[in-house]
Amino acid sequence: MKNKKKKKRRVFFRFFLLILVLFGVWYAGTFTLKTTEVTITSPQIEGEITIVQISDLHGFTFGRENRNLIDRIQEADPDFVVVTGDMYTAGDEKGQNTAVKLLGRLAELYPVYSVHGEHDNDRDYEACLTEAGVDVLDYEWRDIAVGNTTVRLYGITNVYYTDTFDLTNAFTLDQSVYNILLAHITNFEDFADFGMDLSICGDTHGGQVRLPYLGGLINQGIWLPEQKEGEEKYVKGLYSMGDKKLFVSSGLGSYPIPVRFLNRPEIAVIHLKGQ
Image (tube, rainbow, N blue to C red; front, side, top):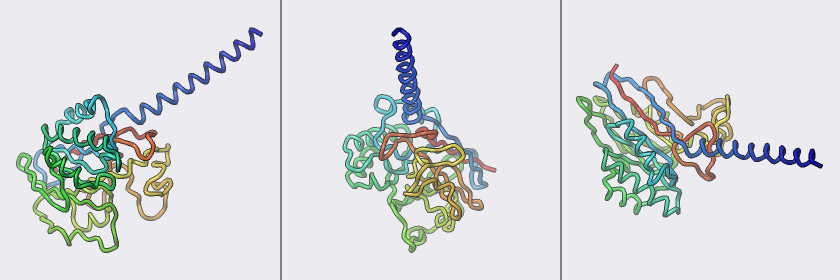
């Protein structure tokens, strides 16, 4: 009888330990922040420009009123902050308030430029951001001077792309400056063809769940997109096409379920340096 009780206790203890480990893996992978830093060089940059990108918050919080997230951004000491959409999930009023408070607080510290995604493409939300000091770019551009360098920042709000998509219908490229595009969803070939030196995007969540050697589990309905032959799938990180660059952030929140694996919530710090 005693042996049976001991055996049951061991089984229960091992089960409890397994649950505890799984909970720890889930929590650490879904709710603890990491900073990803990339460096891009260009002869059009003098000195160094530091950009922080945040994306796809989906109403999540990291610390009380996102204090941990704000602290991590302050550690990077950016010249400006860019936001690439889906900062809350459609229909989530609490998440929208969370996003507005966060971006309003950041706008008190830095210039903040934002584009919408498919979830936060809402005029009331845009009005709240504008009132909070965030510069929302809806097919607009801004010249930003940092030291002796001026970069031109463009923003578009497409949530899909047709075969007739063409940035020349909206913008005239100034090749004398370094050109940066903010877009929620990637369309790297068209961005590079237009002449964007750097495109900064989100949307993919980095696949949200990543598998060793295989990459993202799913993106835009495609399973294991980074393993597909043919057209490259831009899911996470820095990509090149000639001298044109694309950076895709894996974002901060999770959707539709709060689960990440091998793909922690990400703050991207992009360093632009002269060659």
